[in-house]
Image (cartoon, rainbow, N blue to C red; front, side):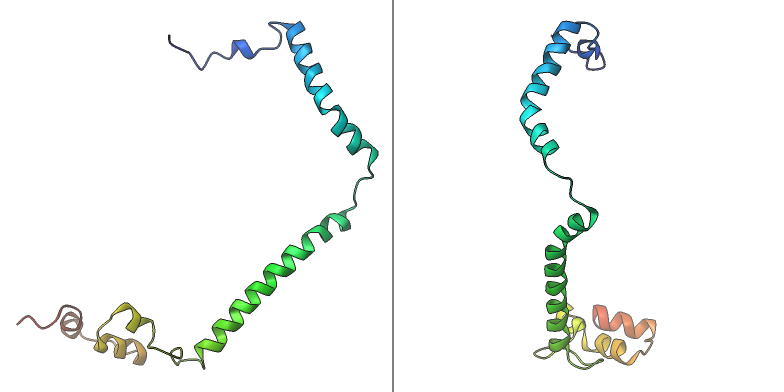
Length: 122
């Protein structure tokens, strides 16, 4: 049993108009109470719709502000590592020479870089 999914002819409403009208009537009957409820209520204005977003937006902003404040308090002054440990290079396990180069902004020679990263294998 093979199905040709490109053939959408069975979905054509003009093939059986009576069936199509019954289906539309059933959908409209099922949706009738909700459509009547919505028609009887006044439509909210733009400011009311925007005010519905105010509480979650302010909550998210407060959460981001608290996270940023916590980060700033624990990181200390600019240029110093966070309290309770070394910097990111130490956490990543870089050799001490690489950490020094990064902190001072020095440019190492290729040989010094290879020795620092791979060790002295001579």
